[in-house]
Image 1 (tube, rainbow, N blue to C red):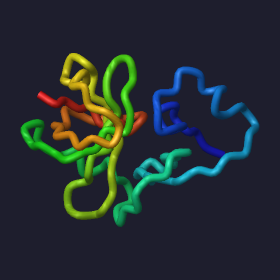
Image 2 (image 1 turned 60 degrees about the horizontal axis):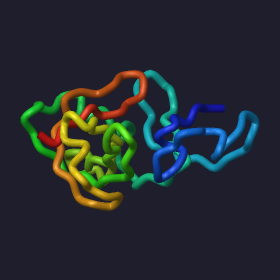
Image 3 (image 1 turned 180 degrees about the vertical axis):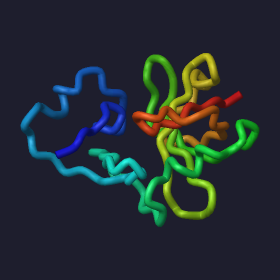
Image 4 (image 1 turned 90 degrees about the horizontal axis):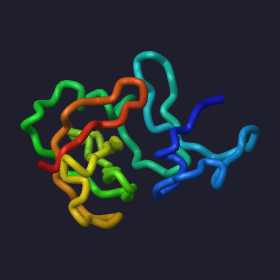
Length: 133
């Protein structure tokens, strides 16, 4: 048993989760993170292999002045979801969100390269809080 966040149900913005899955459905998932608290980070969208246990953890200690390479996964009405390369060469990526007021309206499409800074990590979800400014 586990929970897949709405932003990890598909490679596009999901307005109604029931368009993709219903309670009781059996689905294929990828485990993309194993944080220290023992919870599983699950995704119905395939993620890159990573040699680290939790690709979000390295971002908890980075400076807000550091820039990182990422790729726009998809756009929502309020901003962009970006997969950010994990520092240190582990090969992994962590999902982040750039709201419109922080540059998420930049006109970028899915698959486009993006440079971002990490302002923080939303603890319960592990989503990086990003800016493109």
